[in-house]
Amino acid sequence: MLNTGSKAPDGTTVNFKVICVPNNYPGTVTPFAQTTNGVAQAIFTAPPVPATCTITGKIAGVTIGIVDILVTTSLKSEVSGLSESNFPDRVFKMTK
Image 1 (cartoon, rainbow, N blue to C red):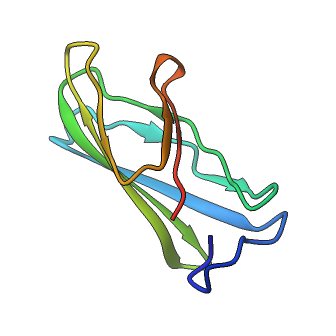
Image 2: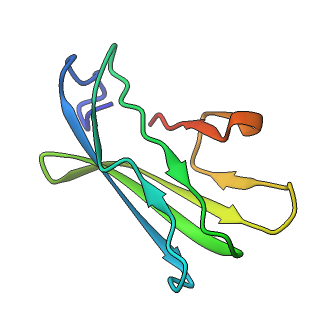
């Protein structure tokens, strides 16, 4: 969603960035995606070691969403800032 509370029009480019701490083994995220029905999807690949990763979504340089993911060595996942998640596929839907 945009800061106006409305959905982004179809075809709007959303840029994604991930920062993981510690960063010796950074995670990766799809750098950008376009919206369909107000949603842009990105694929996050976790680092091979425990870390806290923050994914930020931006439209035209304006932050529209932030999600923190705690990567552990167990199958347990802890995610904050999400409205919906699908842990088996590691697919997260971030809405604001």
